[in-house]
Length: 179
Ligand SMILES: CC(C)(COP(=O)(O)OP(=O)(O)OC[C@H]1O[C@@H](n2cnc3c(N)ncnc32)[C@H](O)[C@@H]1OP(=O)(O)O)[C@@H](O)C(=O)NCCC(=O)NCCS
Image 1: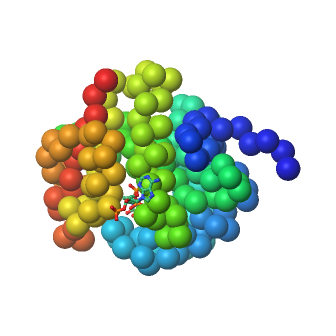
Image 2: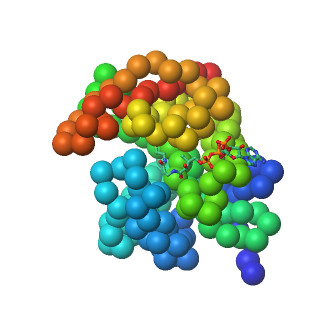
């Protein structure tokens, strides 16, 4: 098996650009209603493929993205975590945000927090970013917990302009970490 190129490595995880072999497991993950509970809907296979293309293009342009994550011990793809430029209109954007999405079998093991810690550190030291925000619906306690565990502070709420027909997105939580 060829050695993968990881942009960020943590104790248990390797974070990298997306590759073809991610399409099937990521499609299964994004079709899981439990994984997508805090989003407007699950994603179809073409939508997931399009998301991978966008994330990969972002990586090629900026050197960072929401990275695909492998477990180092067995190369298993478990989801994504990373940083990404956000340009949707609000009082908090444009900005760089940090986000995460894991398949259910990888929940409850500290992987999201471990990956997010690695990304936040590299955002400041490797990518020269001065401030990172994070957004979540105010019902997404697991995600808010990750924000708190990596030391981000709550700074307010925002209505996501692209998702106006879902009340959960009226008061999205905004957390911040500054260099
Ligand atoms: C948000 C999400 C990534 C959080 O995943 P998670 O596994 O709960 O988060 P963590 O990595 O912080 O793991 C925390 C749990 O692992 C446990 N854990 C087990 N082993 C651990 C270890 N070695 N180190 C740290 N924590 C460990 C912790 O006790 C904690 O459990 P608790 O919350 O019951 O106390 C996950 O719920 C998810 O993918 N949700 C769907 C997508 C989503 O909503 N994304 C965010 C959109 S804003």
